[in-house]
Image (cartoon, rainbow, N blue to C red):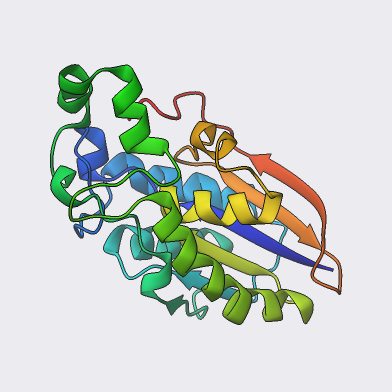
Length: 210
């Protein structure tokens, strides 16, 4: 048996003010530090053997706070761009709520959540999926099959891509999937790499509102 623990980084300085962050390397807000510490508290009974993060500061800060809560000071994470947030292209740095006002609800949700909507100069969820899932298959799944408990600290869209794959969510339904700050997705695997249980800890009632 092994656990896969998926976490989104805590709220960042740009998340607080509604700016699309993407690959911009913005750090955590003070509230994000608290998010990370809460996530650590939610998984204290699980012995973490391996960890993976994106290349971005907010994920690294979140990981550092989680491992401090767990007392795993020597745990090192493998960092890889495959787990980075989605590149928002021309929308990077813009205020998402101002974009909502200018394009309307339907188009805004397409830009923000749709599977394969084209964004000038950027990526969509399909693009994130196509880099995150091969990384999962090559680097994370083999660890799970060896009975190793794995922590992944990534981003809203890279975690959405992983959950889509793990739960076989359709292209249409994944548009409704939102990973909230402070939420922890825990999957239990058997020795053949098959999921036998799944639990969401720390459900965030404000998901999608920042």
